[in-house]
Image 1 (spheres, rainbow, N blue to C red):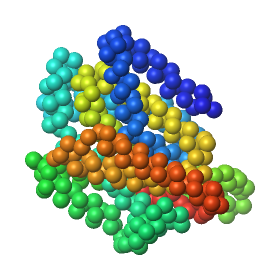
Image 2 (spheres, rainbow, N blue to C red; image 1 turned 30 degrees about the horizontal axis):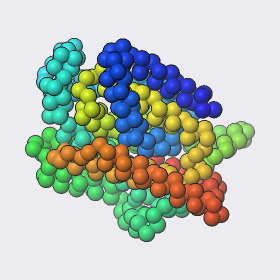
Image 3 (cartoon, rainbow, N blue to C red; image 1 turned 135 degrees about the vertical axis):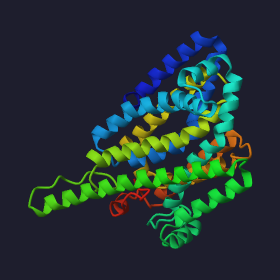
Amino acid sequence: MILRTFGWAFGITVLGLLVAALYDGGTGLALVAVLAVLEISLSFDNAVVNAKVLDRMSPFWQKIFLTIGIAIAVFGMRLVFPLLIVGITAKLNPVEAFDLALNDPHKYHHLMNDAYPMIAAFGGMFLLMLFLDFVFEERADKWLPWLEAPLARIGKLDQLSVVVAGGALAFTAGLFAEDPGKVMIAGVLGMVTYILVNGLGELFSEATDDDEDEDGEDGEERAPARSGPSSLALATGKAGFFLFLYLEVLDASFSFDGVIGAFAISTDPIIIALGLGIGAMYIRSLTVFLVRKGTLHEYIYLEHGAHWAIGALAVCMLVSIGRHVPEWLTGGVGAGLIIAAFISSVVRNRAGGGPAAAAGDDQPLHSSKV
């Protein structure tokens, strides 16, 4: 099970470390290893949330996520995206941007830092919307009932997540941003992207469910409900595509912080791409492991902890528009929340609560819900 799930990650690790050693000797090897650990620590909550979405996808779309999705995550977001941002900022074509990254990494880093407020606003607002949609929804199981219960009650106000996120963006742009206009535009685009991708995924998921209901009414034999916490149909076709698209945008939002934070360790784009790419492979493999083992069904508060970690990351990204937030703080808070949620789940199970498999059958995935 471990080898089958993490085999590609192990293979890419060996290959990446070998390339790093050949490229920059022992120094490159050490830097790539540190960057890989950084990416894993910053994105562990990403794996938990990804697993919740991946559990809704058909085997075909799960394979797409593990093949094409990995290529996009490793090469697209960790190598091409920074070059694209620098190219747009400095009005360079991709070849010139890559040449700048190799021959003048300090200028390349400076240009990336100049673009960071807009990047942080986009990614921070996308993640904040995801967090708010989660905490404003009523659910049977509550990790922090003293806090989650009142939030769910006020969440009955329609579009409250948009109101809160928009207010947070305006406050952040006015307080921290040197160019509030650009930050506001980037943040609004992050909100629009979330609402659009999430809405399309939900729309086509509902259409798939309706089609299956009609098949059942016509007397055709329906497929047995799958085991696990949800008897909803696995998303295929357009629904699967939009869930896949949602996962890619989600991964991109998580990767922004890691890509920028990596420059504190190395300014070499090759070293950064190798280190973050290895880390991204482990996050992908961990996502699959959580789905196949049913970990989220057994430890029911993990999803809660991951979303609170996402909320903390969103706040850190928004604050980082005008203030430096150390990477150890961002990763440490996220990891701490997930560990606390895991311990709470273990305590609940031992106390007789058990995995909430039956309760989960009656609950759809939350509407961020893709």
